[in-house]
Amino acid sequence: MKCAMCGIQIDLVDEAIEQRWTPSFYDGEIQHAPACPSCTDSFLQIDMHGEWEVKKKFRGKLTYTDEEPKKHWVIGIAISEVPSQRH
Image 1: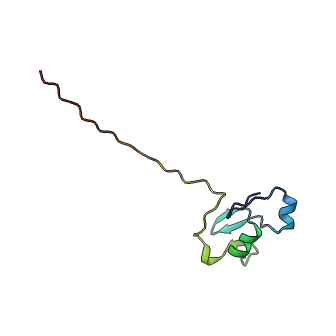
Image 2 (image 1 turned 90 degrees about the horizontal axis):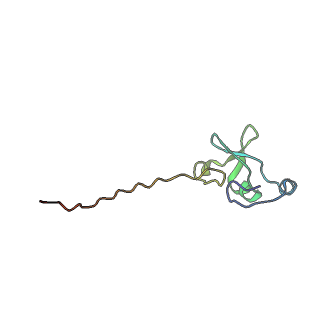
Image 3 (image 1 turned 120 degrees about the horizontal axis):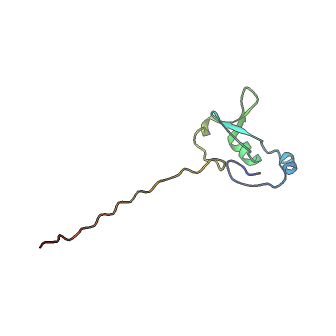
């Protein structure tokens, strides 16, 4: 398992349970999974429905390791001068 916030990894699910990893959490409407205990303590809280969510002051400000990286396109233009051919 890999923390969706800091990227730290743990190999065994049993160890993750023992260390109190959070299985999933929400940042607004987007669900992420999982979070290590340190990130849970720092960035998460339990909402009124009993779900883990990002604390209000951090919403929309965190970068997650479980998201697809944004793709950037590069467009190049080459211009060359063609010598005129006079007869």
